[in-house]
Length: 243
Image (cartoon, rainbow, N blue to C red; front, side, top):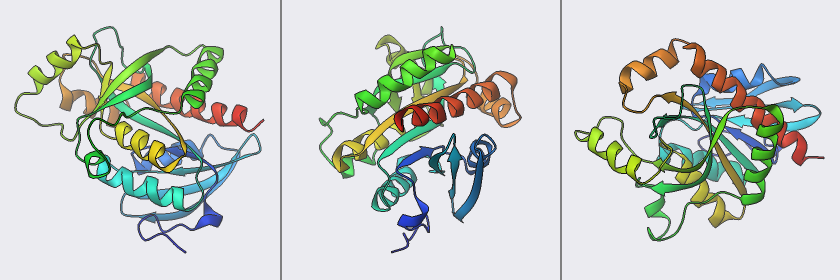
């Protein structure tokens, strides 16, 4: 059965799936594959399938935020996805995290509404530890700079008290903010699939959000290099996992 939003069916989906938010990033992953073809593109959901070092890889964009991400994740799982790695952008919540640094997520706060539709707020948002450890091992072999720890998933960029929110989470040792990681982790645990999340930092702590995002869109050097590193890290992790 073809899924109603991603417009894919089981023959289109590998067990290894990479999840960027941006449909444009899907093609940038494709450029690093041995070969690929586009399977579907509907709304924010763009899907390609291809091979990396002989390993079948699917890449699907999830759009912005938990609601659209959860739709993509659920439909991909219905098509046979077993391992899902998010490669998203994040904003630093600690001052020692530079533009283009990678953040490997050990857990996520559930400061968003999507996962509360699934289960009580006391349920944790955590990745698969073996997949996450493999990412860390691969990252160290590649000699990529990274940070490891808890991130914050939320629902809005433009809140009236953003500075106070950032100060609070900074004091709690949260590394970065994004909008999708907690949804991926909770759904993965509930559905019995393996998930992990790698963020590319595109916003320095205590800097202008709009300006930093604008620099990333306009191909700021550091953040673009960080994106390439997180793509290679996800691909190399799947290549190792498949051995």
